[in-house]
Image 1 (cartoon, rainbow, N blue to C red):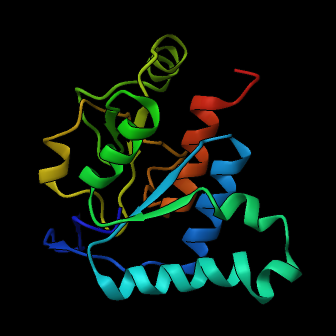
Image 2 (image 1 turned 180 degrees about the vertical axis):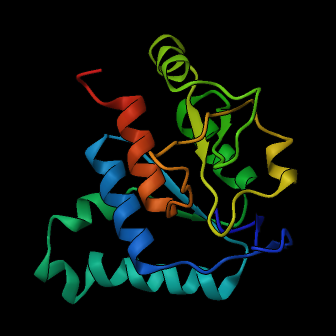
Amino acid sequence: MHYPVLNRNGEVIASAVTNLDLHDLARASCTYDVPACYIVSPLEDQQRLAARLIGHWRERVGKDLHPDRDLALRRLHLVEDVAAARDDIEAACGRSPLLWATTARTDAQSMGHAEARRILAESSRPILLLLGTGWGLAPSVMGEVDSILEAIRGIDGYNHLSVRCAAAILLDRLLAAER
């Protein structure tokens, strides 16, 4: 999600879409067979930029250089807000998704990754996992979700992963076949 997210001062902003995020999120989604990855931004210039970058790798020179990227990048969907992503999922699946948010902050009410894996295995409802860019999801988003996943913890207390790194770690923890 690129909006609504927080900046370093705790203000609600719209963050910039990056080529690296698009590629890495698409490839991680494809690797773990996630059917769709939504890029959320209400900013028209950011949507145009994302569409141009995706188009480069799916239709132009990039497709000739890396034809396998098309398979991954077709999983990306540009939407203005979470409601549009929810509507798209409901139309595709016939059920409204559960909304799960991520955070780097410690939250006593957070759901552990093992519990999330169990729900994924047992539930027939789709899940929309929200990952924030910048300094995380805005409080307005966090107040609307069904669950908040426990934070990814490293070794020495440093905790400021890029969205693409956090997504890859979470996809592995939640969906890896050997778990």
